[in-house]
Length: 328
Image (cartoon, rainbow, N blue to C red; front, side, top):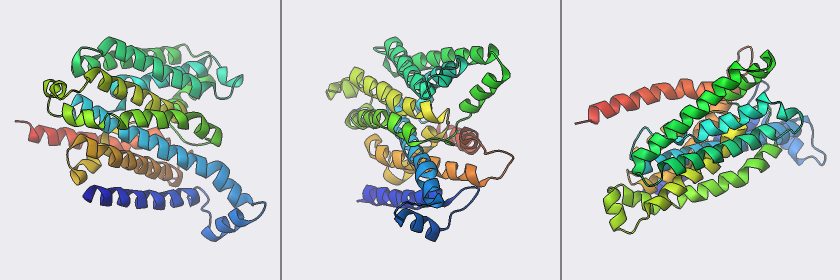
């Protein structure tokens, strides 16, 4: 009953923030004008702004935020580490490297969706490498494999920046790495939605196994849990959902880390109960951050990844201090 109330409350907050995101921007759109434009037979400028610019941007924020929050909750359950987040397995870094390589070689000039497709391919390859290296060695080996893959991808990104053929390519790479939802279209939504949905389904399918794993690996095995299957669901579910999100939004940090912690005190510490609220909280946090980037007036639009890092870093410090106080 309590979980249902929390989920309904988060859904209501999401609905309200979604409405605000459709109206908010450098130019606020009056509700009456938007309603009139949407109800008119041929629409008008307000309707075009909402339907072609702000609505796909909001949908991507919801999908990407939900993917980050859900994957963060699953990885914290799999590793039994409260500081785990989607970047832990090298998925985000792999997606970033794929997109950076597409930008570096100028593939976008010949094929518009080259960067997101290359980003998704990079995420899948990174997850395959992580699983191949870490499978069979327990959670610690899996985490170490993810760290190694992340380091390798980060080195590749640095090399691409170092060897950028011109300043414009380096600028485009840096801009993409800072993360943004600006200028995203329905094409991006259609491109990544199937992968996000499939990845989320894989992550949700791990709920029962996560509850058993909370008792320990030996106890989980005694209850009939196949840990190899659990790791596969966690790694490739994260690769599909977060990799697809990162492929179109760029690198966005801390949402996957903090979203589960926001809802865990409300729903309890059973891993399966955290998953859905964490996904909703992640979607809400990213949507709020995206609206904030449009309302903070500077020379250019503040990048989404920069804002989430500025907000998330103090929360990360708070988590570290809290864990130190709870440590025996």
